[in-house]
Image (cartoon, rainbow, N blue to C red):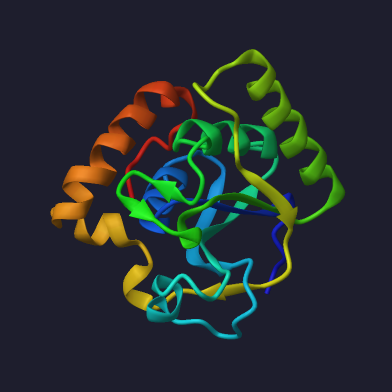
Length: 185
């Protein structure tokens, strides 16, 4: 099997992973987006475990991207503009530590960029409050159950998708139109 050159990994939590997945799947240079869990102490957690709020894990997406087509900084810009990084342990009606805003960095360079952009956004007063996004080292990723993968693309008419994800995605597409893939998945 040939190795992919310029392949890097980013791991972000920004509320419900269905929303995060739908956003990042549409960016040029993103090769794959996998929904899962990270940041906690429970080994091999299930969705039911995560929903209890006791595992320490966040719902996250692991993003494989081509660094020659899209930079980590551009992914961070998409991350910060696709959710509210000022709400602690909550995105919209989704509440709990599993919905926290978090960047799991994979190397020192990612940490540096994440810290820099967070600081710049806070200093510029882009949001109505201070950014509470955690920036922590990546340790382990657990893939979510199959039915969570590609969720919006496969279930776009489901009520949560229609009411929560579609409007968020429509707004995102307007802001990032130059960075979008030419064909929807």
